[in-house]
Amino acid sequence: MTQYGFYFDNSRCTGCRTCEMACKDFKDLDQTHAFRKVFDYEGGSTTADGGVVTTDVYAYHVSAACNHCEAPACMAVCPSGAIEKDEANGIVTIDQEKCSGAKLCLDACPYSVPVWFEDLGKANKCDLCKERTTAGLNPICVDACPLRALEFGDIEELRAAHPDAVDSIAPLPSANVTGPSVCILMSPAGKAWDDKTGAITNEKEVTGEPARAIV
Image (tube, rainbow, N blue to C red):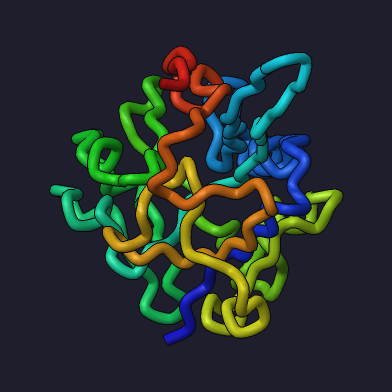
């Protein structure tokens, strides 16, 4: 089986959100819903001592969508069997006809990927632009990125093409839980998934919660 996935070049991403806007436009999503989100992650401090200023401040952006995991936590908890993983390409989808609105997938996904649609009483998420990828095209986010920070393809081929890539980066969680189909080239500022020195500074945008102070 081919497993489709994403390569993300953290060193190229400027946080412009063109990928997010292209997805919203292609999937006809309103301003309150997004299948791809861009996290702003910042940390460090500046100190002055005897007239000498030193700093270890850093900031970077992470563009993330559904990772079409090897072991999708969302699929494991869905009581109606609405979440399926395609045996041919590994794409994980939510069948809107089967979705019962139990919301269990929202809590189960460590990446907070499923999006709740209150008006429909159902959850939905990135499906890798299945209508495009099955026709041999890239997901719309990949083609939209002006810095070419995203690539799409067989995840093993992407990992082979980018041997320095890793499978997680702060603020995303550890890849050990679900086996995400993603590989990431970290920028010089990039931090490991378990970093405690920084924080998401746009939490209101990506999670609906206010930003947390860096402690």
